[in-house]
Length: 189
Image (cartoon, rainbow, N blue to C red; front, side):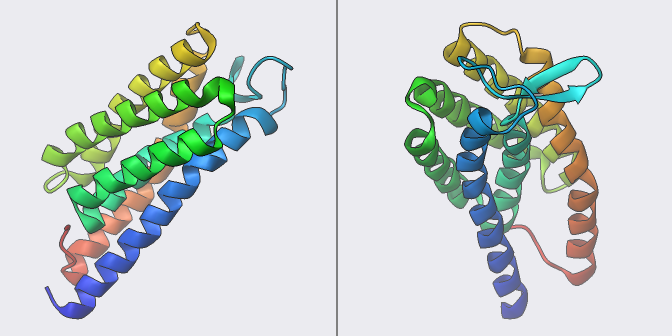
């Protein structure tokens, strides 16, 4: 690969890494500050489908799963693991005390599962890799977070739908990146 393509790949990778890292504190902030309904002892809720509400942080969590995949595609597995560790630290740092354990555990386990599913699929089937790994990650994230944070899976359907919307919205961008990469010869890390 030419040095200009390598520089472009790395620049995009670090942009994805920054966006990924920012998604963590934003998700933690949103859960207590953004929503149509914000009960005093619970998360702020947003509608994700007719009659289905979810904690607002799901939007950023769904996006984080896709961004982690893009970090790996541009910078490699090692940087992806570094991104997960950075995200875990940021989650610990910015989560409200009542949500620290739930936030960090859900984040670390879901992102590591995402990495495990994405890695073997991504070279041949990028869009499938992003969707499959994100689905696995969002189910793990939802289950761990809700159980540890609230002792209940009451918002599970809403969380899965909300995170799923973000994954679906990312698919055209991922497909575009794959086509562009093939056209210009930009290989994954």
